[in-house]
Image (cartoon, rainbow, N blue to C red; front, side):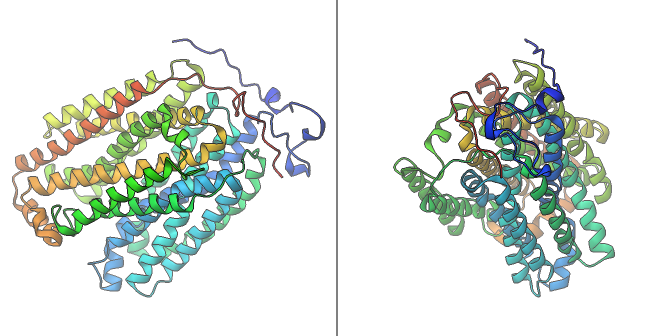
Length: 527
């Protein structure tokens, strides 16, 4: 592998390029930035610092509610609709991600980040003050509409500020914030639910959201503005969102609320298929479609999205099912199984960091994540063949999974940004997160279906399958339980193999050392 001799001289990076009216100093001093110059490391760190709290909020609220759900169900005396507290956020945050990306390409990242945080805080307050389960579900849906924009906007903002060659280094930092928040969420939610009132979980978002908005408003003024004139394809957006909602409902309800072969699930799948076909037809004919054909046809976009969808889907699926494996096969308590899950969560950060450093110094930067994902795949395959190995060995294997899946995140994200025209980065990041969320839901649905089928809790019982699952699991022999989980781990191996192969196929283009490609016009300065 060829190693680059790149020195990051902060003084050189801070020196303005160009001349005339575009030259200036920091907005903190009342002047305008030179939009075509390279930002220094100190400025980039300030920008990421402004995004860190927003990222923390977005990640925290994907997991913090989980441990408080029983308390919420008792408070409203409603367990039947409790799952919608999670589903509402999942649905809305998934379907709006591409929309935020598109709007940020038109109106700018800073303004859309403030809009996302404002909607997120409004949804949090509505959830905290909800007088009924129905209003709580509506509040969570509104919260998801805001929270769904945080991740793609953060990725796009970093793309505006940092050249692709250096971008993986900073992506590792944002990934670390995401992982820490995701790991802290269940613990914090459980403590609040046990010792305070469940509504504090949502009220906490209001002051934190305000602080995030103030930091973002101040620090994001440092970011050069690269947006171009676009039109909003409302019909394309509506078709894409409607098809996603139908598919997510089918994946969420299948085998739990309704049998997989029921009329309800079949109707949702047919509806999602028809709407997707109409969306594709519209994309090929619209003058400026919601998802541009150039983005969808880009080979790096296609293979990169497949890689991150598979690897992140496995990470989320194992995060959900490994605690059950610890409790049912090894007899751990709920708290001990949570502690044993730490490796898969925490080891994502070193994987992301190593991959980011590879992009900074190596020409053949794909090999770092390929090797780490390969080790993760072999490790999970061993667990699939030997599901009764000791807990310490399982923790070691899940640590390898964390390193492998974490390593794919910066490589794929930066590779897509490097291959896409800069004025389309927002919509590309939105689409990448959209497909990743769909894949995660699919992986979890497949693993759940295998679990129910292996333990004899037939999905044909519809909504009663959950209670049947508990009863069957309580009387099953450890070997039978281990065999059920071995099939779940085999599913993880399959998706990891697809992810590795897709990453190997993905074109390894040279990473730019400038934010914009040579053929792109320089951006205008931020106001």
